[in-house]
Image 1: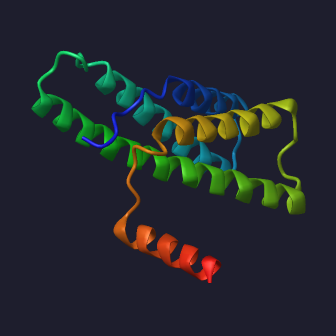
Image 2: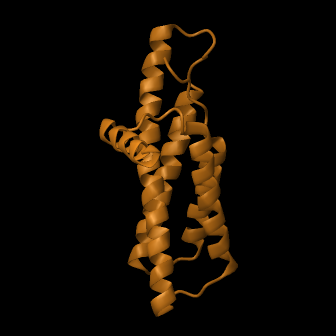
Image 3: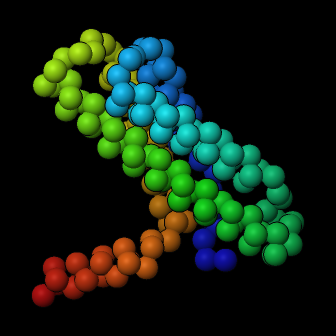
Length: 151
């Protein structure tokens, strides 16, 4: 095992706050509802990730158990990242829509949603950044980009 996973309790809490704040606004907007779905999915996956992480004793479990749980956690972390990135994209789309059409009243809740989403993403990157291996194509493209910069 290259990298041992870490819990993502703070990411889970931050995403949960963002989802709850958005839900409390009770908006009738397609982008906002899609954002809520992505946030709730990411929050639920993060909770399942934490529950799975705590399901074994890392110091005393057999190596095979650690490997199996680590593979499961890695897959879950990749799914969380997908939903997290989609949440950021939808939040930005919603902000762009509102800058043009002003169909949703802007309140301090939006600042809290943005802040919680940012904290959740930062915490996810802090705890899972080394744990998730980039896809081979992404890794290759990053290496090519570094080569181009160095030349």
